Image 1 (tube, rainbow, N blue to C red):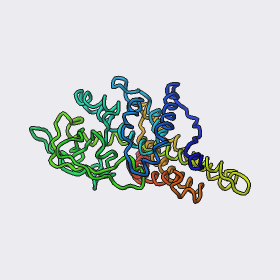
Image 2: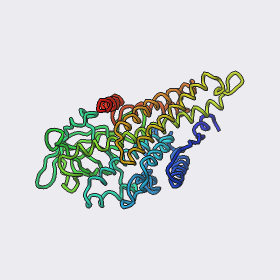
Image 3: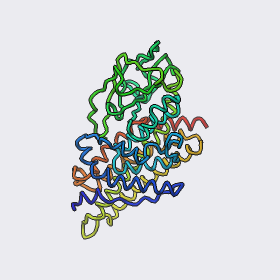
Image 4: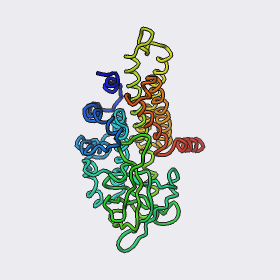
Length: 391
């Protein structure tokens, strides 16, 4: 077995604090699934930009797509702190898949929270079993962090809503079966309305997938709507309440990305530790040299701190406490840490880390976008600073 294969194959044991024996069993299940189903194919799929067909079905069969939802919907009714640690464990092996699950969960949550009984019956079972994949379509070319600047327009008529405009940066764009779509129905913050748009909607087309630095196996694309007719039955909530739906999901979405970033950083740390234990210089493993040992210690401290931040925020969410500031702190610290830890992992491997023989160069590329999506880290600092002024 080559050194590169060994680095991909061994994982440090994480001593987690979970709220139940069921949660420990669940994390063990996810770890086994990741090792058997994800690890053998991740490198080839990411390198080729190949979509993992059928994977969401497998995730749904394991119950991983319904973890934070109630049993009345067929969900796992797990606390958010458990769901997020499942995301982290998936990201430890395959960040693209974990991001896609986070987005799918955010879209599913919008359908459950704001759809009527008919809409829920139509979509929720398929969303939880993975036969329907959901995407979240909020951003536009000129409306990213400023979601109030949405320009995609929906005009109400006797037969439904006619929608025209462009949506961008859609994870699973062109591949997902259903899109939680935010459109403008009137001027101002109170003029945004949300819908669930099926992929086969007449007048809905997609761009070719973007060529990205990383996360290549799950496509990111733009959507173009040209006088697309959306039935009134597909509206989420009341007309004009879309912005509150979007903003209400952001804190939870940011926690999802914090967990994914932590998993990515943990994967990089695993690879660096394995290499530093096996590689020798001057008659001893390189981890025994203080300069490198201290670098690895800083990496481990960063991962542990990121995990603590998102778990703390999740526990506040589970208890019904305000968690906006804590979600912003978790997203900021976890994604900045992921960028630093993955960069340092490349440094630990030296020249080998700069090659595609080892996964750490991919981890480093994947980490960058974590600081950008679900609100840039500059936006997180703005959220945190405003919370300080509100005391």
